[in-house]
Image (cartoon, rainbow, N blue to C red):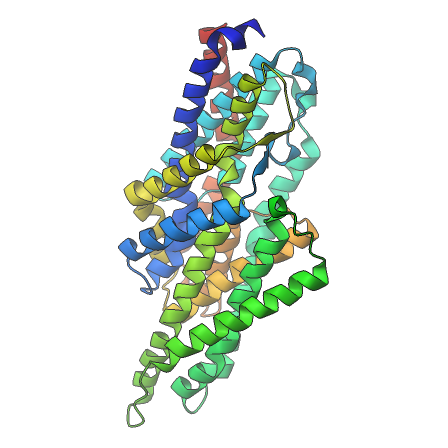
Length: 421
């Protein structure tokens, strides 16, 4: 208690700096891979992606991110053993933020799309093992995280594969692909609005205390889907049809139909990211803030001040602008060749998987889902459409994330303990 009373201000300042560093890493890696498919498919430019991210990332974080955040992420560790030594938890949260941020910086520089959730979880495990004891780690939860390395890409990839096959059957393999694209486009766009509404209603908005039933949530999602479909149909109708054009020209025109459709998925991915993953950066920051301002009370939940939310959103956008292009390039260009139609299928599959996971409790990572979806899109054209060397590097980076975060958090924990102790 005395340590917190003496150094509380310094601890909050460090938490703000490390939190900004962590959210910068989230922007450089996590948000970048969410926008990578849109950029890689040529539907939006990097500048447009940044503009979309600034608006919809903030909307997602503020509207659906929740005003209350779990300070002990995902129930990975049990802090009850250090109730009387709250400064240990402060050291641990600071160490976890710094370790996860450092790993995200390395991964982003290399162009590896890794999970920010797994980065912070690995860091929390490392701190708990040396700061509290191995028994403080919920190892069953860790096993679920490991299982998600297979589950997430498998579900995302399967849905993406099926969506690509559906566009092939309903649009590309018809007598008039462009006319078919215009016919079916509103249905696909309806799915975007419907699914993103469900993500928001199932995973966010709890702080608004709407308390909608599953049936009511589906009703609201249908309405949003219909509105989205109507707006999308208007933009799609603007794509001109050339009756005398060759079949190749029709394919080019079809991709033009999918370009405005990808704008919807790009906005929805940024919104979903803001609502789901911003807490990875600001959760530990909120924990430090609550412990210091409550004179050492270790609370499971803490009110999230608006300035912390704005700091998180600002850091994420900054990360996307400065280093995000490397991960965007990997996801959008290097795994497989993406067109607007393929990119649309990948992003819609990713959003669908998030909905499934949020209601079934499946342990998934947004990053792994999206990479799996891109792999599924590539597999629809055959294994030769994938760059297997790039895929192998990504898988290795996933495997390294947990231990890398844990080891660095241990080192930073002892360093911080030595400085303040």
